[in-house]
Amino acid sequence: MQVDRYERYWMWAATGMLALFLGAIVVTAVTGSAHPPSHVETINPETLDVSGEFSTPGVVTNPDGTLTVSMRAEFYVFQPGIVRVPAGRQVRFRITSPDVLHGFQIVGTNVNLTVAPGYISEATATFKEPGEYLVVCNEYCGLGHHNMQGSIIVEAAQ
Ligand code: CUA
View 1 (cartoon, protein in one colour):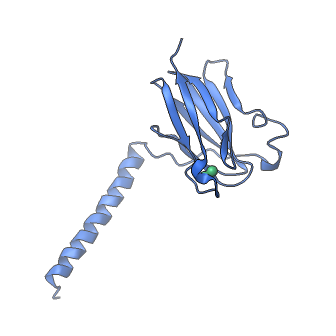
View 2 (cartoon, rainbow, N blue to C red):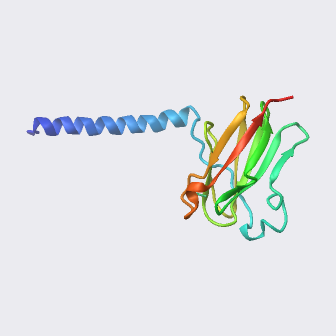
């Protein structure tokens, strides 16, 4: 079959790109840097204010010294908006939404969750370096989406 030279170049270029993108997916999956949500815990989004951990969101220290942070992502804030945790300790984030789909991404870490009403999303992180980490919503959730952010202040361990 006669294939034009330029057409052949483009076919090789397209095949190369496919291989490159597929390779990127395989590499991130194998090295564990992609975390699809595996934790399916449900909650009634209409009663978050009434009772339970999300009616008083915040940081709780567990008996083993780790921390659990219960948070809400809602029109167009994170509750609490500023979270203070010590460096070097394991922090488990539990987050849900009373309204629509939001995102919860801690910039500079691999914590990146989709927050869906009716579900509790979880991620665990240990912050080695003290400092302020920006939290952004990365799912388009409405007119105030671009203003929806929070911060995590990691304090030096005592
Ligand atoms: Cu919340 Cu975008």
